[in-house]
Length: 121
Image (cartoon, rainbow, N blue to C red):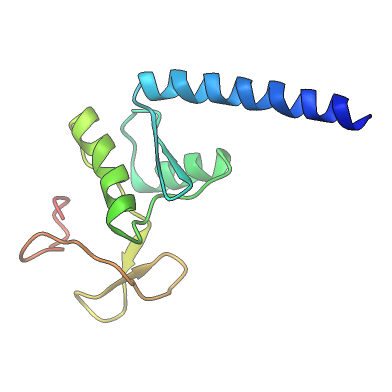
């Protein structure tokens, strides 16, 4: 493919992606923070189903690593008036949490006396 043709193809793809992202933003099913796209299908599911659906979409369950990413997750919580699962788990030390891969959390923003494990952390 000639250089000009490749540029045209790239431009067409960028326009299509931009239009698709616009529609998804209107539907409030995606938001962005720090170059990462956060998405939801708006459906309620258990943790394992959520984890599976995220993997099927080529992503991972959200785990906020900074205030901007936390805000992106909160966007869905507020718009869908529900909770969101996070990609964190309790470590072997009770009350201490870590990412699903076992690495230590570098950012937290828990409410006072949370996490309590009651789903309102």
